[in-house]
Every structure is written in structure tokens, then in C-alpha cells.
Image 1 (cartoon, rainbow, N blue to C red):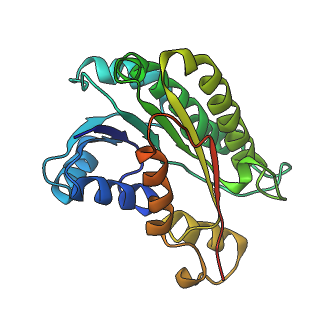
Image 2 (image 1 turned 90 degrees about the vertical axis):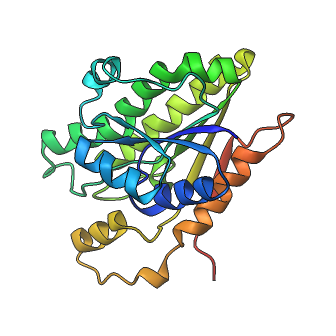
Length: 229
């Protein structure tokens, strides 16, 4: 049985991954933004442990964790949570820029720093769920893409730094996936949302589990997942 720390386990890809790992008996530690959300996650996945920490306030994560019990061993840290707010560079507020960079980049960096001792002990894995926007930026996606480009840089640097410690680092780049975030994107784009037109979160979860379960003699460094058909 392995121990997985997961952000974004409440919906979309994160929820699909958490359900799959829970079903096979792995030990889950789910990050929640507040006590109420932690209670909901624990009820949905009986036996899972929770940690409370708001990704929108990455500078307070260390303080929040100092008042809670962290797992002694972490086999994998899965960064799945993310936020998006579209807008042109000329219109997007500084508050929106900060929120996306805080949640999508700075919080994963800080969480990784805080859990690195446990990951090194386990010779574990850090997995980042990025986005196609982490490879190229489109109009109105500047802030989100900047945060995801930064996340790619974080993963690439971490991979090189932690190789000698046996910590594997994987980035998954899903295309548009059915989720509440995708519904919000369509609303901001002024488009009708058809959930069946995009990747099922279970399909992305399958690729993530493949990367996690890969034998120790190899590592999936970067994995793109695109809508089929």
C-alpha cells in the first residue's frame, strides 16, 4: 500500500484519480482548503486522511501544516488542483494574475518543498497535472498559461535536482477535459458547453496511474493527453 498526497481531489481529474487509488486500497491524504471541504472529502472516500491548507495562500501553508500531523512517508505527491480566469492582458486584473499564479504555481512549489523529505525517504514521485496551455499560449489565456509555463519549469528543474535522491518527476498535459473548470472556461468564452465533447477525467486518471505504477527502472517525464475521435 502506497501513500498519495493529492490536491484537487474534490472534482474532475483529481476526484477520478482519488477514487481509483482509494478503490485499490492505497492510503490517501487529501488537501482541502478548509475544514468543511475536508469533511466532505473524508465522507466521499472513507478512510482517507485530510490536510487543511488553502492553495490560494501559499505563504501560509507551512504555518497551517505545523498545526497538523503530516504523513511520515509520501510515495507520490499529485498536484492536480488549478484555477483559471480568462481575459486579455489589457483587461485582466492584477488580482486575477496573482490568484492563478498562487494556486497554479507557487502553491505546488511550496507543497513540494514541504513534502520533499518524505518523498526522498520513499524515493517517491511528484506528478504535476499541467495543461496544453503550459506549452503554448492563446489569446485571453496569458495569466493561466504563464502559471502553467512556470509549472513546467518547476517540474523540469525539480527532476534534475532530485534525480540523485531517487525522486521521479512527471508532468501530464491534458487537453480539454470534462470538469467544472471546463464549464467555467466555456462560459467565459461565450460558448455552449457539451461535456461529452471532451476527454473523460477517467481517461486522464488512467494515464496518471500508468505513470505512477511504472517500474522503478523508468520514468514518464512528460505525457500529453488529447481528445480522440
